[in-house]
Image (cartoon, rainbow, N blue to C red; front, side, top):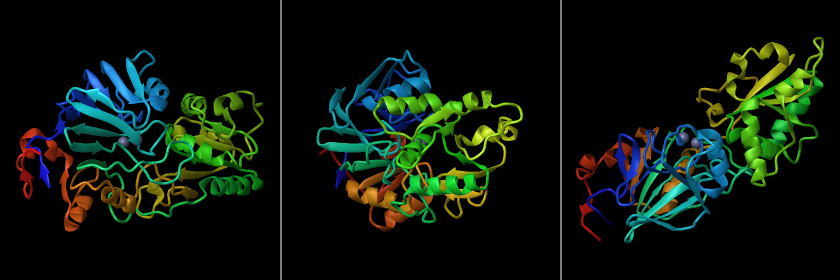
Length: 347
Ligand SMILES: [Zn+2]
Ligand SMILES: [Zn+2]
């Protein structure tokens, strides 16, 4: 295998940068042209002159970074030219409109994954394997302890917890992130819920974006509206309340009557930070677990892999299996030429 002597996508102070195409990917400082993998705040920031993203994700992006941004949307798999490169966006299975970014120059193909998962999720398109020479992968759960059971019926399990708790006269408070996790829970609950789920106000507008994109979600009411119409002597009973983890710091707890808590997250895996901190846990992740990270890297066919977020263990593991793996910082232009073990020549 041979590689170009300069990286098609490099690592800069603003994040991932494709000089040949004249664009950044998920830059963390203001740039002229930003390809955005998805609307989570660590990927989609304010202040770029122009945004490119998947069409399904435009409304979420505007809700997060501003209604008046200059943004152009593309279908999954639609190729478009940027500078000397051809770019296309492919489903990452992470949240609505989430993408991996495929960049081609000549016959060299790089893919930057953004955040991704392989688990079934009725609220977004399934993950697509994108063959490439070089793969820049996230690795949020990049240690072998993070492996979870696939194909659990999350909606049924959450609904059972709701019914059991309601039978005790209590409410359920289910914590999940406002964008992505909350709507996935609502989509999983759609076949089971017989009354509205009460959602925190930070979840409401994002949830409407999903509905406008045609996603079938459980019925919802906004928690503050419901509390507003309660008499002073009344309290909630038998409700399922879906809220970001910050809710208990907002002074809400006293208004929620008696309740049990649960967290829906990959961090509910034994050894994760959420394990044993709640009455119940639903291991339900927005990210690939250790097995799916390795599966995806293998299926991509990449000979060279750069790892973002939790890198050490995955890099060592990949090297043992013969893949040329590095920390993403090795994509700094100065570092790149020093990578050992590869032939550097133009294809
Ligand atoms: Zn994300
Ligand atoms: Zn992220």
